[in-house]
Length: 226
Image (tube, rainbow, N blue to C red; front, top):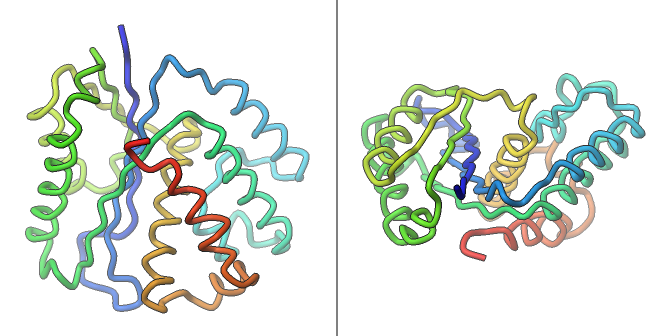
């Protein structure tokens, strides 16, 4: 029985627009369970411990912004951790797609919900044959936002068969951390294109064009379809 796992993370919320970052982004990471990534996970955990980082959960934006639990790490250590997550992401046989909504074009949470639902429906409809190759689809999400949970459950259960939803913690699943990483890269892409990067983000990616060349373009090689 072919099984597809889908790991979901989001950036933004259904509240009022924040001018500094008006984007709502949902990332879906797809992984065929026939492709074992166990050795890659073990290697990443060893590498993190070699860096003196005991927490196996990599949360990308706090890492970049030097927030807990990364507050006491140097920029070199934080960049080293992020690069290990990048290499892990690129080594995994996965594909992803993003839904990006500029909340200035969605005046309230109802319009935002409608836009997300429309984009998700369109993506599944255009790639229905891919999803129908699998007899079972398991969706992993931490149910952090009720509005998004309702949208995902409604659309996937309506358009696909045999879908199971699991309330999952990023600390337990590395591919949820990958979804967080990819979602963060998409947010940084949007902010970079609109000159909205913060001082902490600019200081972290201090080399010219490093963010676009080394991170954004690399991650986009995993964009669905591959």
